Image 1 (cartoon, rainbow over the protein chains, first blue to last red):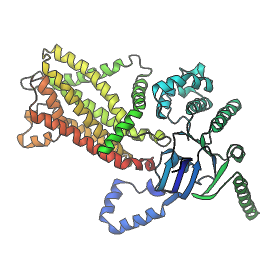
Image 2 (cartoon, rainbow over the protein chains, first blue to last red):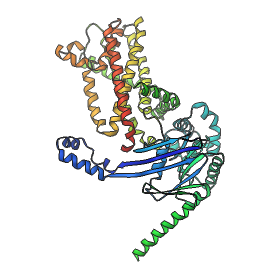
Image 3 (tube, rainbow over the protein chains, first blue to last red):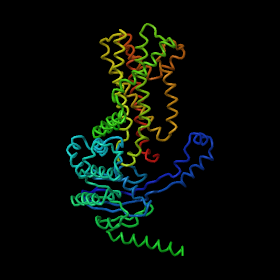
Image 4 (cartoon, one colour):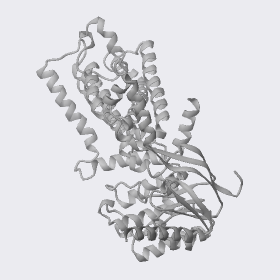
Length: 264
Length: 264
């Protein structure tokens, strides 16, 4: 990996087995041991149930690049983010990451709803891999940014969802990570907080953070990204500048027109 | 194997604050809104053990030859209760934290480990009533009590190994929760906790001696009740019963942990 490369995805494929929920019982497993034909059938069925969320994805992200991932639902965007974040291991291929990651895949994933906001700041900070002195030193900053100082000792279960998201965003962004992974979270909180969180993100981007950003809002992608990766059914359709957004948009509207024509 | 353990220790250092937070979280959540709070950690085992003591001394008229039955019962019960509660909580810990495992990268072994430590602290608290009984019944304390930390460490390692093993199996086979419930009841009766080991016919004794808990409890009772240093073979068996299950647990957990994500 070169010095200026931050994330390197090499021929990554990710397979899920759709039949995993069904064919798993002790009884069935027992029966199958004695039945060679069944076993063969099962193997074939397993193959049929395979689903490739990502197939031969290959790209490199340089340091400081802000990369947007676009594509329809089920294109593999979130799976790709999870693989980069280390939550999943790819079935095939290799992922190289050259810095510390701040994954904002789902805000507040590490919260315990029974604990207070204060306790959750420490718990969630620990989940992200920070130690106590660090969280101590950033505590006021987190509270200030989230504007929740009045509710610090209230259990999080009594928070509104906007408040939870605000707290989580404040904890997640208190560090300056080298790589920021963002999965459609800028729509948290009220308008004022949205503007504030967007400002915080821009601040990080200007500070040289490498960003991997997923959004269905082409407007926001065009606004912040300088590189766009278009995914469809697990394949990379195109990698390029924000012009790719327009192509993507045209392809959707074209499909829509075809559907409309069929209906008519 | 050695590399695995080394990596585990490096990870442990980085995530030691998270481990601490998870243990603290368990205490906070467990005693939230209860009037007596952490005092229950002391009171609960005292009360349940009192019930058992009452039943076995007054109703079944049990006794152990040459020693105080109450101390005999309690010393076994304290050890077994730790094993039973920690393995049960440890087993469900990975499944219970799927929400987190699916969102952020955390070393997964931290969940069963934190449960073993959490219950372990409770276990140390139950030693207070145990020692109260040792003193009140006139059994007395001797210098060999200083050797007891050895068996506590062995017990802890064994429990951690079991928790690793069970928690990874439970991800793939949820039936394990029910199977283990039955198994633990059987295990309790197969361990000489409330009866004297000498009532077991000689030809079956070997079967009972395959049980690691038999050796841990024997070690403790040799010191507490018979005021003697356990013979070298008991030390050896205790060590084997700690290390071998721990190795198996680590091995199974490591082999299976990358697959957890598919069984969410």
